[in-house]
Length: 296
Image (cartoon, rainbow, N blue to C red; front, side, top):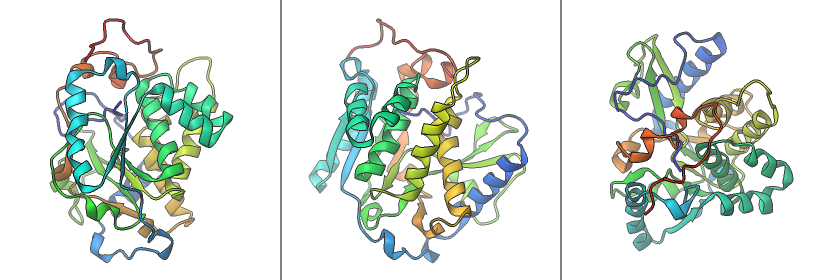
């Protein structure tokens, strides 16, 4: 299942408050500098010269009730099998088994505390890429047929940048925010959780998994944790910031994919986005799958 971020659609579902605390602004400014740094200036550190497996991994919590429109998105990636890529699809049960076998009881307990399928997909993607390496992409992302071989030429973590405009409650097009110096006070820069491409044991993925685990362990009797900050892009962006600022790995361990929309985009609309399978409509609410959920 997808983490279901806003794309460039004009949807007034604000992922941020109208004002930012200083640490949030500092983090946004740091990400902006990363995003606007020319990729050609970055040298690949020797530690990240190894290449990730050519394996595309996806998740949908209940494959027995996979919506037809989501299935079509997932099947768009099958053409890459002709280029030597392997496709793997996990559901809640197989994802949980993977976490249990490779990471143990602590992480299984954290996975079980993910109260919405989108959280489980977030937690699983960190777990899988940390353990095995490869390429995780959301189930509602459509592949446009462009080459992706260059994204597997080294083991750096490849991420898609996002920018949200608080003032207009809309996403900023990449063509407007990736240029050096482009900025507005109302813009918030952050990093998407899809795609997630890296070698195994990448330190940023490790930190994202650790931060998500700790956040899920901090139970509150009053309310469920917020999805985006706990497992989603907020967690990933925070993790990138922490790892690179404390210099536990160089900035060159990360490659910002400025033009990912040429390779893939999140499809809008999809039927599931209008019901509680959309995390934005279930944020901090106990999730129960509807018996009337669409079947294939």
